[in-house]
Image (tube, rainbow, N blue to C red):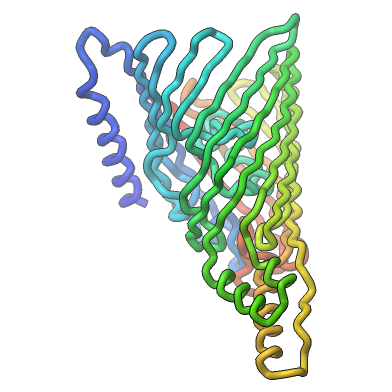
Length: 400
């Protein structure tokens, strides 16, 4: 952990050194620096499983991080923003998260060009800023359904008021070309033709949001590609087609939230549909309620994920030749590696806002995995896992 945070500090200083030469004494107020940090300790009470990287030992290496953001204002309409984040989790790459130019020709319209957060969810912009939401960690069964969180492209946001309603429209277009982690493996992934739009409405204490996103995915899985070619050579095109992970992915999201000074109710539901056989269809949701009596908050949350692969039955005949028997056994083994995954999570937690910019949190998450576990997502069966475990976490959130 110390080495990873040291790397982050070097990255943050590099960003500052790049920005500093552009500054003059009379324009120092145009540079705005901010940051965020979190340190989270976690312990899973089952030695036969892992959950979001935590196991049967106390660890601070999974979700702790440090981020620095710099914004330079050229004038009232034009600015540039950069953000670097260092993660202790070895399945997230530390470094540049955001780097975009913002153009705001009016108070209502803003256009961003560059690398930025993709607006899949309510908390897409603040995924790593735990101070911005009440939970210690976002509802995992819902927020791990998106395999990437940034894109390179253009985003436009338009907001206005109509009577007592605050209305926001947002659309984006771009691409993603980087590595994603799946089953602790780095996979080169490219998403082209990536676009989406969302709209949100706020009336007094009530807010509603809906979004649609899609993109053409190209995932490099060399072993699957070679085996698919072999199946086609033998004439089993239907099974070969299932092994193609590439194709159109569509993502839908809806949310409803109600909040006042005393309590809150927050919820989101999403659905992902894929054309590629090796990419699952996913349905997930969460609902959370909390009670505020400043500086304390108590909350309870329930989340659920249903991940399903459209497995195609083997069309390879058995008992004809040893070669076909081997081919059938290999296909069955591949199918078995892509198991459906159903999981729920119930979390209870508290937050103490010790200072205006520092919060302490404590959280317990009861994890329940149903049927066979895929080991590709939050829950991993290390052997002998009965599907039930409790994750205990303590954390501190800081913004500056």
